[in-house]
Image (cartoon, rainbow, N blue to C red; front, side):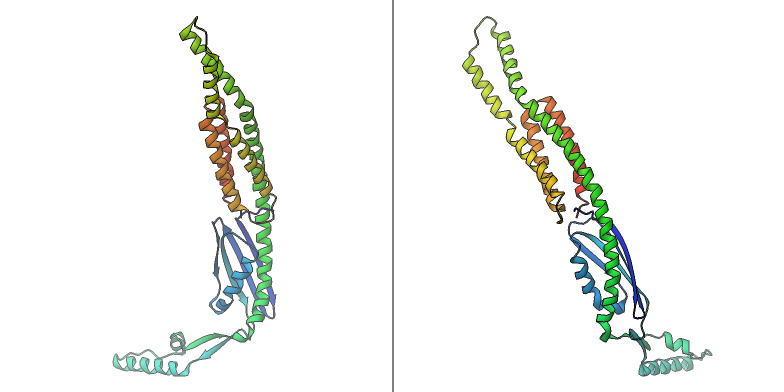
Length: 292
């Protein structure tokens, strides 16, 4: 089933005194582009998240937001660097003495100094943390993919309806095509008769002229290929794989065949039908840009 590249999903999980909340948002993109934002102490799990999403999503620009709202005692520890604190205290004392300052050197002042108090992550518990985070990611991905699938169904229906319109127009072109030769034959006869009046028309030369014209305006191959592309497009819409790029290629090919029909047919009725087909193809192309 085709999927849209636009989607949103949210998941959360609380286990082992940890709580993770993960949000996924995506928009159109030619390839898969995953941007992950997560707390610094979880940066080692970025590759896990990227690989896990890549295993279930093929295309789109996806923004991933990870937050940890509850921590286990084993997750982090706060460490005091006494030596750094001592350096800061000595420097503050010298400044106070040199500039005759009255302010006291407080705990708050020392605690705010860089690298005096360090928050360290316990690296020994990465697998346990990932197990909990993955459950939140699973939930977010399920909602995310479900939304993309529902949107994909709407896109599919719209494209199929437009394919039906295009097929009807192509059938009208195919039906109209043989009449072009007959009308051209009658037109040539009429013009020759007007110029030559009582002189007998050379049927062999007339037939040659008509045959040349018929070969020039013949669009049977283009119609056959266009019908084939329409059928391939319909079949692709039933695929369970990511078909966005394939659909984009098919639309380009359908456009090319339609343009050729318009330039070769040399007929106002067909030209108008070609305009209608190109209009529908452009609408399909816009929809295809949003398909995974």
